[in-house]
Amino acid sequence: MEQQIQQLRDEALVAISGASDEAALDEVRVRFLGKGGSITAFNDRMREVAKEDKPRIGKVLNEVRGVVTGAIDERRTSLVAEAESRAFAGVDVTLPGTRMLSGALHPITQLMDRAVRIFRRMGFALADGPDIETEWHCFDALNTPADHPARNEQDTFYMPDGRLLRTHTSTVQIRTMEGNPPPVRIIAPGAAYRRDEVDATHLAQFTQMEGLYVAPGVALSDLKGTLEYFFREFLGSGVEFRFRPHFFPFTEPSFEVDVRSPQLAGGRWLEIAGCGMVDPAVFEAVNGRRKDRAYDPEAVSGFAFGFGLDRLAMVMGAVPDIRLFTEGDQRFVGQFR
Ligand code: DAH
Image (cartoon, rainbow, N blue to C red; front, side, top):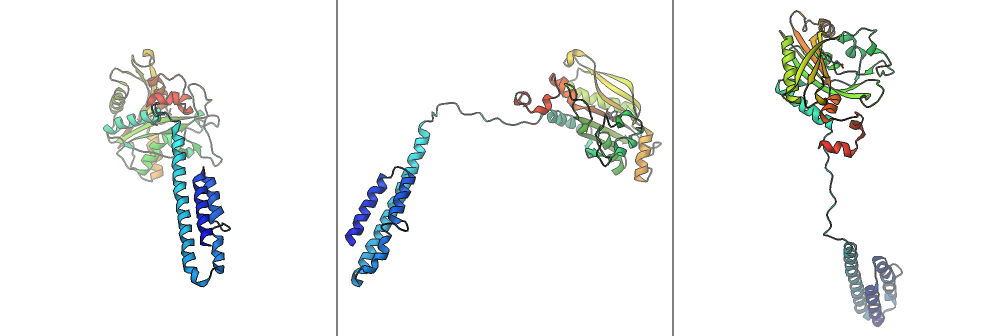
């Protein structure tokens, strides 16, 4: 029997070195060492062995099992190594590598960050409010009458519960004053929504930057100085300004700001912002909510402004179609790294 076991060992070793891949090797393992394997079969046949021979034969059987198991493990290791080196054999290591594309902030976000940094230098703090707003914060508190066209369902996205997607970031003026007594000096960048027909210059969602400064004695000259400083920093020192009288329900007097620069839009005047002195009616709406006189129009005054970042991004980057900003095409956004 000892001889039979030794012979099985030799057969197994030959089969192991002949196995050309892992699957074949596994078949060999099952054939010799599996449940019904030929070496395993000798476990049962130990019963036939005479008592005095049992220790010796048992030892041989154990040794053979150990040798065959070891040979299988060794063969498996070298088969894996061979397979790996075959996989690399076709690779030309002198070829240039695959370039990894690194991401970057969206161009509008980059502009917004720059604008925020400039206002922070002038002491403006960041404020925000919800995109889904009440009609009161979006219109009533901002002195916008019930029959104003902006309140129309054609122009504004209304929720079934009567709330709406804010049509401008001016809502944050109200939220800030509701929650904080004067003085307040804030900017609020964020999304605004209108039911515009989407075309090369309109999207249903755009980005605005709102500003508000309320304190005793804030004057129109402060508004002018602040906006002129901002746009000079933002667009370059060569810009010219025009403050054109206009109407907004929430400011009195109100203005539109035009800028002109040889670097922008071929030197044409561009309408870029709305602004004005906070209307006393807005202060009174806030006082009503606060149930105090913190914003007494006889004691405090303020200025407010708002502008869209998407249009600015278009003129600054000579971008012909606003939809490019939302399509995520690498050929476009990749230019703003
Ligand atoms: N909310 C105005 C708009 O979306 C922009 C604006 C005009 C904001 C005058 C202001 C302001 O704060 O004082 O067109």
